[in-house]
Image (cartoon, rainbow, N blue to C red; front, side, top):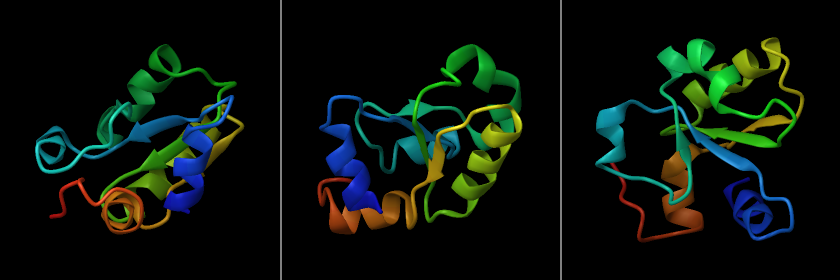
Length: 102
């Protein structure tokens, strides 16, 4: 799925890339242009900081927290939400080898 996300980011209506990892993880690896809201803060911040009508792709390190984040967004009324399988780890291997791995 990271390859599909990379392709979609170059399209006419790119999705919002939402990073739900913790702040300290940003120093280890990041995807340029991603919005960062840690999973523990997502419920409190999502409606104020994200467009519920936008396409949102949630990612974390390996894909577990992003599943929880995507489910939470759907509970909040977001309708076009996906979790990026494999997380930033798979992104670093399959899309952008300049992204750090940890």
